[in-house]
Length: 168
Picture 1 (cartoon, rainbow, N blue to C red):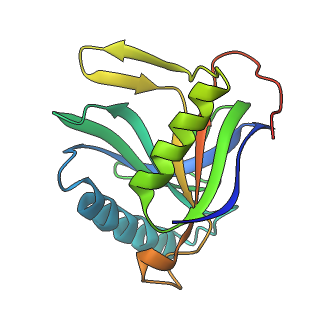
Picture 2 (cartoon, rainbow, N blue to C red):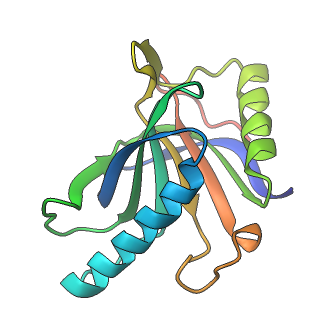
């Protein structure tokens, strides 16, 4: 894993999104992400939508032993339909880490650093799993131009609980 930036805490404004949301088992989640990303790119092309920012994977609910509630989206404004819905990524303080390759290692690094800093994430336990107010993998590298995922620059951005101070 190559760390590009972070981990650190930064405040972010809310942003409009368009996305496709599904429930999928943890095993196979990334293959489902890839299918949804392809569908979203096709939909954007067919509807003349240009992104205002990068594509992302948002984890709404995490249950590694059951189903994950995921959304593949893009920062963009527009009107959805039955497949693509409009949404918002909330404003707030986010723990941020940019990296290339080895997603699991990056997640462990981010969680370990946040624990050392005594930062709490905006997450609550539900019957469906851990419900996150903001847990995103943002694809800084445009997947439309770089098909090799091992070369993608990715940014983890996890919303904190409350107003955390910026920590570098």
